Length: 195
Image (tube, rainbow, N blue to C red; front, side):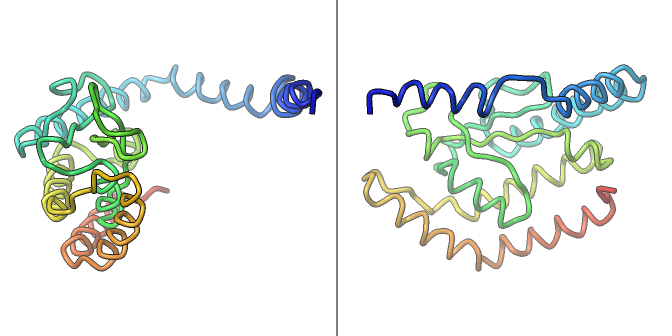
């Protein structure tokens, strides 16, 4: 179809993009008002404190952080020294009620769909009211969950990876130790409701 390019362009603009989006403008206004409040500065400082404590505890537990620590709200954990793939780790932690995401790390030799790291941050848990004491618990849960799946080695052959991950998910969903961590996490979060 010689007109395919024009059709795609017009589907994007004005179809999907372009024009004023009043809902986004209103959301930005609300965000800027919140960010101007003194309580937001206090909240931001606690987010960073929490991230620093979480980073320190993970390092103490043998994890390598890509930057050696953190100065902001994010942590990028390189799992290569643990022998665990980021996709496997992220799913195991999700079963354990700790939600984060797989992520590539500097000089990662693994493909993006099966990266060597995980990325996590502290804004959501800080919003719930958690502080440094809870970061120590979270780091220990992360350590226990990663230790639980350290023998789950992702195949090097591309064609075997998808089947391996499907089978791993079945095992992880029934893993008693991951489910025990999930209950401990649930018990903690009851003390820090979202609303």
